[in-house]
Length: 43
Image (cartoon, rainbow, N blue to C red; front, side, top):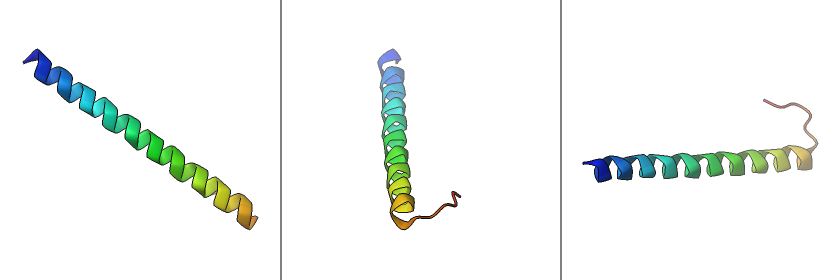
């Protein structure tokens, strides 16, 4: 049962890391888009 719980926690941490990486990637793309288009307004 401990191994099962550890696996679930490990999976949750992996998903959290993947989500964080995706959000960072989206933010970088957004920053690039804003800088390329000279937009001064951040939403």
